[in-house]
Image 1: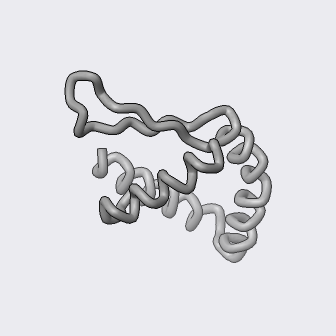
Image 2: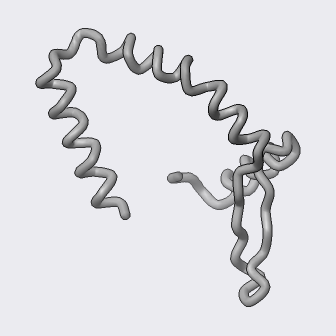
Amino acid sequence: MLTRDSDLTRLLDRLEARRLVQRGRDPHDRRTVTAMITEAGLQLLRKLDGPVNRVHREHLKHMTPQQLETLRTLAEAVRVRER
């Protein structure tokens, strides 16, 4: 996720208030915070899978199978580079 640190803290505050994530501190380095998705967060994501897939299909329906494959390949190349 690309965001400024203060924005990320506020986002995590809101997600934690809704019990969608929980945070913990590293016992060896208190500056490190780990955020983990909760079961409620996973349930919400599962609920959103269908609507998000429908939006993607609608936005990409004008593309040919070959164009979609090119898009997939390029997206994969970006993802691999960001690791």
